[in-house]
Image 1: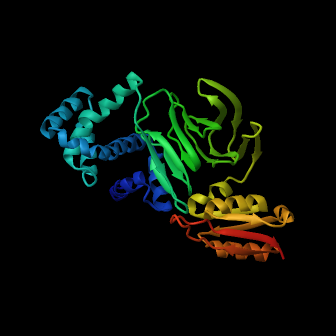
Image 2 (image 1 turned 30 degrees about the horizontal axis):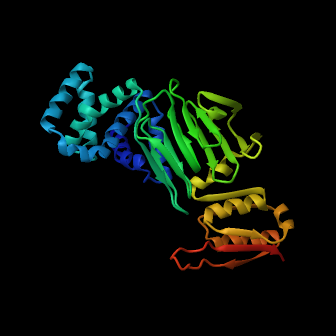
Image 3 (image 1 turned 60 degrees about the vertical axis):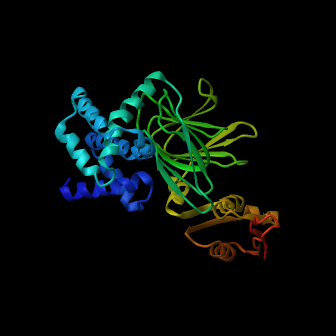
Length: 349
Protein backbone atom coordinates (compact mmCIF):
# COMPACT_ATOMS: atom_id res chain seq x y z
CA UNK A 1 0.00 0.00 0.00
CA UNK A 2 1.30 3.47 -0.90
CA UNK A 3 1.91 6.07 1.80
CA UNK A 4 -1.02 8.15 0.55
CA UNK A 5 -3.28 5.12 0.88
CA UNK A 6 -2.06 4.53 4.43
CA UNK A 7 -2.72 8.16 5.31
CA UNK A 8 -6.23 7.84 3.91
CA UNK A 9 -6.99 4.72 5.97
CA UNK A 10 -5.66 6.34 9.13
CA UNK A 11 -7.80 9.41 8.49
CA UNK A 12 -10.88 7.23 8.03
CA UNK A 13 -10.43 5.04 11.11
CA UNK A 14 -11.98 7.40 13.70
CA UNK A 15 -15.09 7.73 11.54
CA UNK A 16 -15.15 3.95 11.06
CA UNK A 17 -15.13 3.34 14.81
CA UNK A 18 -17.88 5.91 15.42
CA UNK A 19 -20.03 4.80 12.47
CA UNK A 20 -19.81 8.11 10.58
CA UNK A 21 -18.41 6.87 7.24
CA UNK A 22 -20.16 6.38 3.93
CA UNK A 23 -20.64 2.88 2.55
CA UNK A 24 -17.71 3.29 0.15
CA UNK A 25 -15.42 4.53 2.93
CA UNK A 26 -16.39 1.60 5.16
CA UNK A 27 -15.51 -0.78 2.32
CA UNK A 28 -12.07 0.86 1.95
CA UNK A 29 -11.30 0.28 5.62
CA UNK A 30 -12.68 -3.27 5.59
CA UNK A 31 -10.62 -4.19 2.50
CA UNK A 32 -7.49 -2.86 4.19
CA UNK A 33 -8.28 -4.54 7.52
CA UNK A 34 -8.68 -8.00 5.99
CA UNK A 35 -5.83 -7.65 3.47
CA UNK A 36 -3.23 -9.04 5.88
CA UNK A 37 -2.71 -10.20 9.46
CA UNK A 38 -0.45 -7.20 10.06
CA UNK A 39 -3.23 -4.83 9.04
CA UNK A 40 -5.67 -6.68 11.28
CA UNK A 41 -3.33 -6.41 14.27
CA UNK A 42 -2.74 -2.72 13.59
CA UNK A 43 -6.49 -2.16 13.32
CA UNK A 44 -6.96 -3.65 16.80
CA UNK A 45 -4.27 -1.36 18.25
CA UNK A 46 -5.90 1.68 16.68
CA UNK A 47 -9.25 0.65 18.09
CA UNK A 48 -7.86 0.24 21.61
CA UNK A 49 -6.46 3.75 21.42
CA UNK A 50 -9.69 5.18 20.05
CA UNK A 51 -11.78 3.42 22.70
CA UNK A 52 -9.66 4.96 25.41
CA UNK A 53 -11.35 8.29 24.73
CA UNK A 54 -14.10 7.04 27.03
CA UNK A 55 -11.62 7.30 29.89
CA UNK A 56 -11.16 11.07 29.60
CA UNK A 57 -12.87 11.81 32.88
CA UNK A 58 -10.50 9.50 34.72
CA UNK A 59 -7.57 11.44 33.27
CA UNK A 60 -8.13 14.19 35.82
CA UNK A 61 -6.65 11.93 38.51
CA UNK A 62 -3.67 10.72 36.49
CA UNK A 63 -0.09 11.86 36.89
CA UNK A 64 0.76 11.96 33.18
CA UNK A 65 4.51 12.09 33.74
CA UNK A 66 4.35 8.98 35.87
CA UNK A 67 2.09 7.36 33.29
CA UNK A 68 4.57 8.07 30.49
CA UNK A 69 7.34 6.45 32.52
CA UNK A 70 5.10 3.40 32.97
CA UNK A 71 4.61 3.30 29.23
CA UNK A 72 8.35 3.16 28.66
CA UNK A 73 8.69 0.28 31.12
CA UNK A 74 5.80 -1.56 29.47
CA UNK A 75 7.41 -1.15 26.05
CA UNK A 76 10.62 -2.71 27.33
CA UNK A 77 8.94 -5.50 29.24
CA UNK A 78 6.71 -6.54 26.34
CA UNK A 79 9.46 -6.19 23.74
CA UNK A 80 7.40 -3.92 21.51
CA UNK A 81 9.25 -2.63 18.48
CA UNK A 82 10.07 1.00 19.21
CA UNK A 83 9.88 1.91 15.55
CA UNK A 84 6.43 0.37 15.13
CA UNK A 85 5.20 1.84 18.41
CA UNK A 86 6.37 5.37 17.57
CA UNK A 87 4.80 5.07 14.14
CA UNK A 88 1.47 4.16 15.68
CA UNK A 89 1.64 7.04 18.14
CA UNK A 90 2.54 9.57 15.48
CA UNK A 91 -0.27 8.44 13.21
CA UNK A 92 -2.88 8.48 15.93
CA UNK A 93 -1.78 11.86 17.32
CA UNK A 94 -4.43 13.66 15.26
CA UNK A 95 -7.11 11.70 17.11
CA UNK A 96 -5.86 11.36 20.68
CA UNK A 97 -3.54 13.59 22.68
CA UNK A 98 -0.44 12.19 24.37
CA UNK A 99 -1.49 12.23 28.04
CA UNK A 100 -4.52 10.13 27.19
CA UNK A 101 -2.38 7.69 25.25
CA UNK A 102 0.00 7.44 28.15
CA UNK A 103 -2.79 6.75 30.58
CA UNK A 104 -4.42 4.18 28.33
CA UNK A 105 -1.23 2.29 27.61
CA UNK A 106 -0.11 2.36 31.22
CA UNK A 107 -3.40 1.21 32.71
CA UNK A 108 -5.92 0.23 30.06
CA UNK A 109 -4.24 -2.72 28.35
CA UNK A 110 -3.11 -4.43 31.53
CA UNK A 111 -6.48 -3.71 33.14
CA UNK A 112 -8.29 -5.54 30.37
CA UNK A 113 -5.96 -8.45 30.61
CA UNK A 114 -6.27 -8.70 34.38
CA UNK A 115 -10.04 -8.43 34.24
CA UNK A 116 -10.17 -11.32 31.79
CA UNK A 117 -7.92 -13.45 33.95
CA UNK A 118 -10.12 -12.78 37.01
CA UNK A 119 -13.25 -13.52 34.94
CA UNK A 120 -14.91 -10.60 36.74
CA UNK A 121 -17.94 -8.63 35.60
CA UNK A 122 -17.77 -5.48 33.50
CA UNK A 123 -20.13 -2.58 32.95
CA UNK A 124 -22.78 -3.02 30.27
CA UNK A 125 -23.57 -0.24 27.83
CA UNK A 126 -26.60 0.39 25.63
CA UNK A 127 -26.95 1.79 22.12
CA UNK A 128 -30.36 2.41 20.56
CA UNK A 129 -31.70 3.93 17.35
CA UNK A 130 -34.83 6.02 16.93
CA UNK A 131 -37.49 5.43 14.31
CA UNK A 132 -36.13 6.01 10.82
CA UNK A 133 -32.53 6.05 12.11
CA UNK A 134 -29.64 3.62 11.68
CA UNK A 135 -26.42 3.47 13.70
CA UNK A 136 -23.14 1.58 13.84
CA UNK A 137 -20.89 0.63 16.75
CA UNK A 138 -17.55 -1.18 16.98
CA UNK A 139 -17.31 -3.47 20.00
CA UNK A 140 -14.19 -4.00 22.11
CA UNK A 141 -13.14 -7.08 20.11
CA UNK A 142 -13.34 -5.19 16.80
CA UNK A 143 -16.73 -6.64 15.82
CA UNK A 144 -18.93 -4.16 13.95
CA UNK A 145 -22.69 -3.93 14.56
CA UNK A 146 -25.14 -1.88 12.47
CA UNK A 147 -28.55 -1.25 14.07
CA UNK A 148 -31.75 -0.80 12.10
CA UNK A 149 -34.57 1.59 12.98
CA UNK A 150 -36.08 1.24 16.46
CA UNK A 151 -33.47 -1.22 17.72
CA UNK A 152 -31.33 -1.59 20.84
CA UNK A 153 -28.18 -3.50 21.68
CA UNK A 154 -26.66 -4.07 25.13
CA UNK A 155 -22.99 -5.00 25.28
CA UNK A 156 -20.15 -5.10 27.82
CA UNK A 157 -17.61 -2.31 27.67
CA UNK A 158 -14.98 -5.05 27.42
CA UNK A 159 -15.42 -8.75 26.76
CA UNK A 160 -13.73 -10.40 29.73
CA UNK A 161 -15.28 -13.87 29.96
CA UNK A 162 -15.02 -17.01 27.87
CA UNK A 163 -17.81 -15.83 25.61
CA UNK A 164 -18.60 -12.56 23.83
CA UNK A 165 -22.29 -11.99 24.53
CA UNK A 166 -24.53 -9.11 23.43
CA UNK A 167 -28.29 -8.65 23.87
CA UNK A 168 -30.44 -7.46 20.97
CA UNK A 169 -33.95 -6.09 20.61
CA UNK A 170 -34.88 -5.13 17.06
CA UNK A 171 -32.71 -5.71 14.00
CA UNK A 172 -28.95 -5.60 13.47
CA UNK A 173 -26.28 -6.71 11.03
CA UNK A 174 -23.18 -8.24 12.64
CA UNK A 175 -19.65 -8.40 11.22
CA UNK A 176 -18.01 -10.45 13.97
CA UNK A 177 -14.25 -10.49 14.50
CA UNK A 178 -12.89 -14.04 14.36
CA UNK A 179 -11.90 -15.60 17.68
CA UNK A 180 -11.91 -19.39 17.84
CA UNK A 181 -11.49 -19.41 21.63
CA UNK A 182 -14.25 -16.97 22.51
CA UNK A 183 -17.61 -17.61 20.79
CA UNK A 184 -19.76 -14.58 19.98
CA UNK A 185 -23.40 -14.91 21.09
CA UNK A 186 -26.38 -12.72 20.18
CA UNK A 187 -29.03 -13.15 22.87
CA UNK A 188 -32.50 -12.06 21.72
CA UNK A 189 -34.30 -13.34 24.81
CA UNK A 190 -35.97 -15.97 22.63
CA UNK A 191 -33.32 -17.39 20.31
CA UNK A 192 -29.53 -17.36 20.72
CA UNK A 193 -27.14 -17.07 17.80
CA UNK A 194 -23.57 -18.37 18.26
CA UNK A 195 -20.67 -17.70 15.87
CA UNK A 196 -16.89 -17.59 15.94
CA UNK A 197 -16.50 -14.92 13.29
CA UNK A 198 -18.87 -14.25 10.40
CA UNK A 199 -21.46 -11.85 8.93
CA UNK A 200 -25.19 -12.22 9.51
CA UNK A 201 -28.44 -10.37 10.14
CA UNK A 202 -30.77 -10.82 13.12
CA UNK A 203 -34.32 -9.47 13.37
CA UNK A 204 -35.83 -9.82 16.86
CA UNK A 205 -38.63 -7.32 17.29
CA UNK A 206 -41.17 -7.79 20.09
CA UNK A 207 -44.21 -9.93 19.28
CA UNK A 208 -42.66 -11.16 16.01
CA UNK A 209 -40.75 -14.34 15.08
CA UNK A 210 -36.96 -14.09 15.30
CA UNK A 211 -35.30 -14.16 11.87
CA UNK A 212 -31.63 -14.91 11.19
CA UNK A 213 -30.08 -14.56 7.72
CA UNK A 214 -26.51 -15.76 7.18
CA UNK A 215 -24.27 -13.96 4.68
CA UNK A 216 -20.94 -15.73 5.30
CA UNK A 217 -19.52 -18.41 7.57
CA UNK A 218 -21.53 -20.66 9.87
CA UNK A 219 -24.04 -20.15 12.69
CA UNK A 220 -25.24 -22.27 15.62
CA UNK A 221 -28.78 -21.64 16.89
CA UNK A 222 -30.02 -22.60 20.35
CA UNK A 223 -32.52 -21.72 23.06
CA UNK A 224 -32.12 -21.67 26.84
CA UNK A 225 -29.13 -20.74 28.94
CA UNK A 226 -25.65 -20.88 27.44
CA UNK A 227 -24.60 -23.73 29.75
CA UNK A 228 -27.94 -25.51 29.52
CA UNK A 229 -28.87 -25.13 25.90
CA UNK A 230 -31.23 -26.80 23.48
CA UNK A 231 -29.56 -26.92 20.08
CA UNK A 232 -31.67 -26.05 17.05
CA UNK A 233 -28.97 -26.79 14.48
CA UNK A 234 -26.87 -24.74 12.08
CA UNK A 235 -27.55 -22.67 8.99
CA UNK A 236 -25.37 -22.05 5.94
CA UNK A 237 -24.73 -18.91 3.87
CA UNK A 238 -27.78 -17.68 1.92
CA UNK A 239 -30.13 -19.38 4.36
CA UNK A 240 -32.80 -17.80 6.57
CA UNK A 241 -33.97 -19.29 9.86
CA UNK A 242 -37.32 -18.20 11.32
CA UNK A 243 -37.97 -19.07 14.97
CA UNK A 244 -41.63 -18.99 16.04
CA UNK A 245 -41.90 -18.42 19.79
CA UNK A 246 -45.50 -19.68 19.87
CA UNK A 247 -44.43 -23.29 19.29
CA UNK A 248 -40.62 -22.99 19.62
CA UNK A 249 -40.18 -24.35 16.11
CA UNK A 250 -37.64 -23.21 13.56
CA UNK A 251 -37.96 -23.11 9.77
CA UNK A 252 -34.92 -22.86 7.49
CA UNK A 253 -35.05 -21.89 3.82
CA UNK A 254 -32.75 -20.65 1.08
CA UNK A 255 -33.01 -16.92 0.32
CA UNK A 256 -31.47 -14.10 -1.71
CA UNK A 257 -29.42 -12.54 1.06
CA UNK A 258 -29.24 -9.04 -0.41
CA UNK A 259 -32.99 -8.60 0.04
CA UNK A 260 -32.65 -8.96 3.82
CA UNK A 261 -29.53 -6.79 4.09
CA UNK A 262 -30.77 -3.95 1.86
CA UNK A 263 -31.90 -1.88 4.86
CA UNK A 264 -28.25 -1.13 5.72
CA UNK A 265 -28.09 1.07 2.60
CA UNK A 266 -31.51 2.65 3.17
CA UNK A 267 -33.26 0.27 0.75
CA UNK A 268 -36.40 -1.82 1.02
CA UNK A 269 -36.63 -4.74 -1.39
CA UNK A 270 -39.73 -6.86 -1.99
CA UNK A 271 -39.56 -9.89 -4.29
CA UNK A 272 -42.86 -11.71 -4.61
CA UNK A 273 -43.56 -10.96 -0.94
CA UNK A 274 -47.06 -11.38 0.43
CA UNK A 275 -48.88 -8.23 1.47
CA UNK A 276 -48.82 -9.44 5.08
CA UNK A 277 -44.99 -9.39 5.01
CA UNK A 278 -44.96 -6.03 3.23
CA UNK A 279 -47.28 -4.53 5.83
CA UNK A 280 -45.16 -5.81 8.71
CA UNK A 281 -41.95 -4.34 7.29
CA UNK A 282 -43.49 -1.00 6.36
CA UNK A 283 -44.95 -0.60 9.85
CA UNK A 284 -41.48 -0.99 11.38
CA UNK A 285 -39.74 1.12 8.74
CA UNK A 286 -42.08 4.12 8.94
CA UNK A 287 -43.39 3.69 12.52
CA UNK A 288 -47.04 3.55 11.42
CA UNK A 289 -50.02 1.24 11.96
CA UNK A 290 -51.38 -0.38 8.79
CA UNK A 291 -54.84 -1.96 8.79
CA UNK A 292 -55.93 -4.31 6.00
CA UNK A 293 -59.69 -3.97 5.61
CA UNK A 294 -60.08 -6.75 3.03
CA UNK A 295 -58.40 -10.05 3.95
CA UNK A 296 -58.04 -10.94 0.28
CA UNK A 297 -55.36 -8.25 0.03
CA UNK A 298 -53.05 -10.26 2.33
CA UNK A 299 -52.53 -12.80 -0.47
CA UNK A 300 -51.36 -10.17 -2.98
CA UNK A 301 -47.66 -10.39 -3.87
CA UNK A 302 -45.44 -7.34 -4.22
CA UNK A 303 -42.17 -6.91 -6.12
CA UNK A 304 -40.53 -3.51 -5.72
CA UNK A 305 -37.40 -1.70 -4.56
CA UNK A 306 -37.40 1.57 -2.64
CA UNK A 307 -34.51 3.82 -1.65
CA UNK A 308 -35.27 6.47 0.96
CA UNK A 309 -38.74 7.12 -0.51
CA UNK A 310 -41.43 8.69 1.63
CA UNK A 311 -44.33 6.64 2.95
CA UNK A 312 -46.66 8.32 0.46
CA UNK A 313 -44.39 7.43 -2.47
CA UNK A 314 -44.24 3.80 -1.36
CA UNK A 315 -48.02 3.59 -0.92
CA UNK A 316 -48.63 5.14 -4.34
CA UNK A 317 -46.41 2.61 -6.05
CA UNK A 318 -48.11 -0.28 -4.24
CA UNK A 319 -51.45 1.21 -5.22
CA UNK A 320 -50.49 1.26 -8.89
CA UNK A 321 -48.99 -2.23 -8.94
CA UNK A 322 -51.41 -4.23 -6.80
CA UNK A 323 -54.91 -2.92 -7.35
CA UNK A 324 -55.54 -1.54 -3.88
CA UNK A 325 -56.34 1.88 -2.54
CA UNK A 326 -55.42 3.47 0.75
CA UNK A 327 -56.41 6.22 3.13
CA UNK A 328 -54.33 7.94 5.79
CA UNK A 329 -55.26 9.06 9.29
CA UNK A 330 -52.48 11.43 10.26
CA UNK A 331 -50.84 11.54 13.65
CA UNK A 332 -52.49 13.80 16.23
CA UNK A 333 -51.38 15.21 19.56
CA UNK A 334 -52.90 13.86 22.76
CA UNK A 335 -53.69 15.80 25.92
CA UNK A 336 -50.52 14.58 27.60
CA UNK A 337 -48.39 15.94 24.74
CA UNK A 338 -47.68 12.58 23.11
CA UNK A 339 -48.64 11.85 19.51
CA UNK A 340 -50.65 9.00 18.09
CA UNK A 341 -49.12 6.91 15.31
CA UNK A 342 -50.19 7.56 11.76
CA UNK A 343 -52.76 4.97 10.61
CA UNK A 344 -52.94 3.56 7.09
CA UNK A 345 -56.03 1.72 5.83
CA UNK A 346 -55.75 -0.64 2.83
CA UNK A 347 -58.67 -2.04 0.88
CA UNK A 348 -59.52 -3.32 -2.58
CA UNK A 349 -60.37 -0.85 -5.32
